[in-house]
Structures are given as C-alpha cells and as structure tokens.
Length: 84
Ligand SMILES: [Zn+2]
Ligand SMILES: [Zn+2]
Image (cartoon, rainbow, N blue to C red):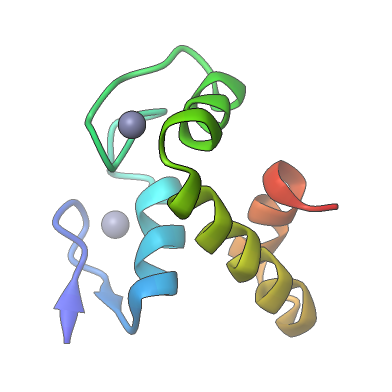
C-alpha cells in the first residue's frame, strides 16, 4: 500500500491520494502537489490547479462527487472548493 510522504498515512487509491495531497496537514500549506509551486491561499492554489492542471481538477471534481455521496469529511472540503 502507498503512503503519504509527509505524514505516512496509508493511501488506498489514486483519488484518495489526490485528496490527501491537497489536504494533508503535514504538507506545506497551499503548495501545488503537481508542480510544487506555492500560494498564499487555498483559493489561489485551486485557481492554479484549475488553470494549469485541468486533468487534476477534473479528477478532484469526480472525487468531490463520490465523496459527497459518501459524506466523508475530506469530501466536504473538496466539495466546498470544487463542488457545484
Ligand atoms: Zn499526509
Ligand atoms: Zn501546479
């Protein structure tokens, strides 16, 4: 099983990895996990991901949808950012 390089938490799949890397409390705050660029706010980071990594944004959107149905806590954060 794969583990988060920051906190060592087990990660069970590509979508879960995506969600975890965005919200891992031990990762640098608001760092793009795809290219490593840093941002001053959650909003700027998400705008960057939408603009520069559309495939990731799309995957997170799918994750948000799945998470909303599962009513998970991490899902609520993602839904707040990517929902609608
Ligand atoms: Zn982690
Ligand atoms: Zn990036």
